[in-house]
Image (tube, rainbow, N blue to C red; front, side, top):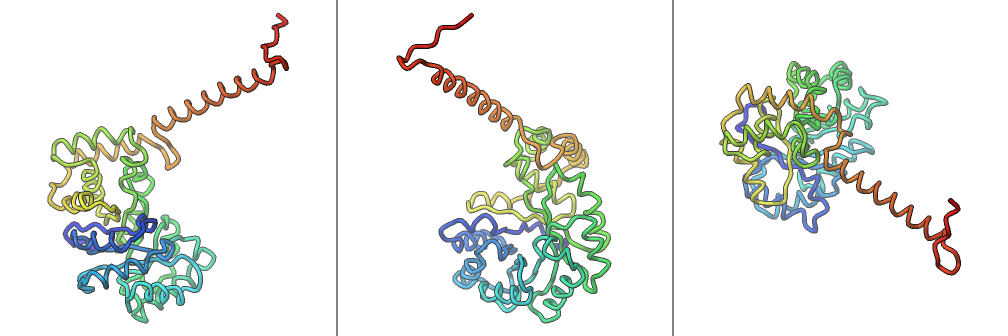
Length: 303
């Protein structure tokens, strides 16, 4: 995947709540996405399968990934294949390290068997940190092909060592939630260098974030149900690379901005202050009401 022309993966995570996720997946493929990412926990593997079959798409031109989310691994992968209407997926991931943390080696042996049995062309993991990846690589007979993680400018610094380790061992990193600075943490330090790069390139802030991810040698996993947004993401391939100065500026802003996933933007704290102030005034109002006499008059102050 690393040598491919820029090709983001469409995550089906956020389309499971739609009345018909099939339409969304069909739209993505028709728009140009070939990498479709889903999971047992998304409860929409059947919809992805319907999109592949109903849309008349060439299966060999698609890259289908799904994830294990608990239960008997051999039974679960076959269940996923049945729902997808496939005999083999291109990538099967352990969705969370907690699913195998009690027996990392035993759990990974089950994944290796899935590859050996031809049920998945590649196997990998998701949400593994550096220590967990190191433990896994030590016991693996077949190395994981992929580690899919949350990655954006605000958590890049804490993931640099993980990215370096994965690259050293030939493990592809896939990134989800890369647009977090725009969608969940707007108003932070990253906004300024992203806006500057967007102005120079004539690009959107989202496209700049994706160029930043691309500069790290990472595959993007994104999602949208809007055709214009999907086209915007695919158009990233035609946008020139960020300069080293622009990349460094985004890195620096991310490291000095929000310190963790639990940090919140200015708007959030304004909202909290408004709620607290409203609560204080409401409390004073009801206390005042309780202090009224039965005639309804305010009590005379003793002072």
